[in-house]
Length: 270
Picture 1 (cartoon, one colour):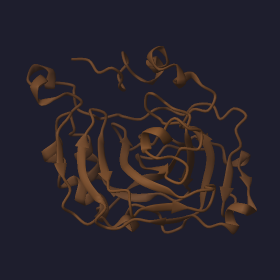
Picture 2 (cartoon, rainbow, N blue to C red; picture 1 turned 90 degrees about the vertical axis):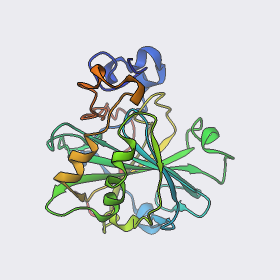
Picture 3 (cartoon, rainbow, N blue to C red; picture 1 turned 135 degrees about the vertical axis):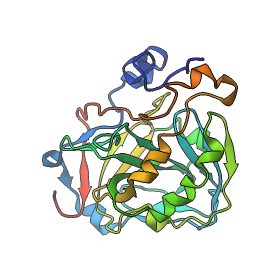
Picture 4 (cartoon, rainbow, N blue to C red; picture 1 turned 180 degrees about the horizontal axis):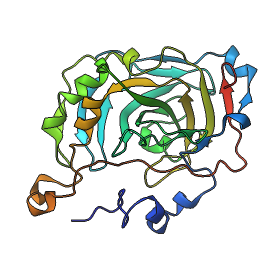
């Protein structure tokens, strides 16, 4: 059973615009962050990015067929400051990775890829009444992008997710998350970042995202990345012969042109 879209040659990013016209828009993500074109913006330094996530806000992890996603109780979460004019609530977080550690991040920096990229997806709860409504608005969503770099030790926060991977091997499977998440382990200590106006990096590719991409990466172990690659893009009912080649070893969209968009940065110039 073929997916409506995916990351193979037949249904990958180069084909998305045929079914999802927004994917061919001028405000698409990800982009290559050309540090020489980043504009230092004093207003970003004067309004620090602030995020607050209760450790018990996660309630479910699901295999979407395109990767894993952790859903959260958004009520007591908050992201504000920096490029944001309103308060945004955390809806979910997920990850993108590649078949090797040489590539896997969606954003790149001066052409450099990281092994993976974590996305924390928020919605504008001051202006809109739901995530679904916000996702149709140009300022509806705010996504934090965190580069993941392979190191020698496990990432404590991601280890909670690794423990549940065996329960969500196949598309559509989900499991309750009984863990307390230390969100500090998912975010870099330095909150210096780049920001620009972009889109969802998966269909329907709505141009609704204020992106904040942190400059410093967070560590992930080789073992943890290997566990992500064990996920399947097919449901358990389609397993068997179709199982071959169904591992999610690559689920990232390559960079698209920044075009006329402004790339701003908070913190010292790179």
